[in-house]
Length: 221
Image (tube, rainbow, N blue to C red; front, top):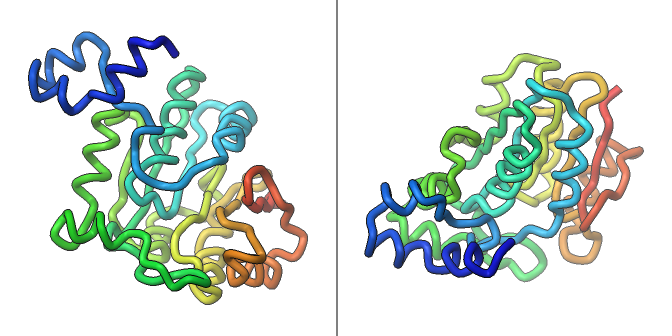
């Protein structure tokens, strides 16, 4: 990426306020995924998925927060030229205290949005120029899974609540939705920081493999 592109992305909000959203987008200035708050280090997994699956595939990310990884995936799909549908699912109300530290990672964004970060998430997708590439479903994981037919998705990535019961419920809800040869995967496969994630995956999918940066993956038979 050029120095000019990096500069304009970093100062996107200022440029938009000065020149107007229409002009800024017309000349190709937009935000990039790495300017969005959040946690994400597995872009190579996204690149692998986009390379592996064919046109007309559908990818679902369950648990998007403000869209850092979701917008990265949209960018990878766009760069590939493939016709792959990207769908993000989140309650946009946060997960509350989680992990060994009992930290609420989403509270700031929830409070800033008056109880939801749905507006901020949607704005980030639009600001990244991905409004036509990324679809959003504001819903809990299990309810959203019911919107999809069995064996209708190529890849589902789970990154919602991280407690043992929720991870198991998410796996059970989404596994039937994936086509044979498709992938079910998830974030934070880390025995020290997120032991309940590892335990839930091990119980339901004992042959799942560690994958990429603290991810796990199961290839559906």
